[in-house]
Image (cartoon, rainbow, N blue to C red; front, top):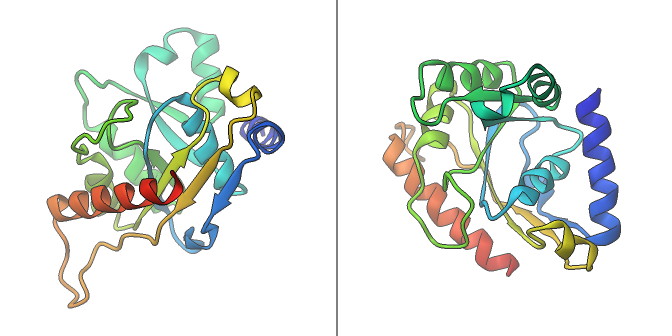
Length: 196
């Protein structure tokens, strides 16, 4: 309930001020859970990705520090975030998203691991989780404002989706995590270049 209210409110704000445009939304899978893997420059691209997938709701991993008080814990869980210890990731770091994906839900991951405008090697989390859950990876890229000031100044906002990355090759053999991560990296770079 809270997720839908916040996401739809943000969607309206983005359309009005950022003139938000979603490109190739037809690539979003409808019959399965999937990992949505997006480029990451600021906190705004997290919200932009979530609003672009509506009416689907997205579940995000979030650093455990955000859940440190009862009030913040309740809020972040209400918007489909779940805590992860980034310094010492345990089995739940994998178990929780895999369980959600098998329930045909969506997991949002920013595989660069941090906010950056640089071309950095991707971490393997998206590929590992997708492989374990046996779901595709939906690549996405964002361009636009990186803070509230830029948003309200009218800087245009775009989100583009690529074709889902499947876990198997054309001959039916399974891709390993390294191959999936490399394919995802190439696709994200391609999408980012298309919307600049």
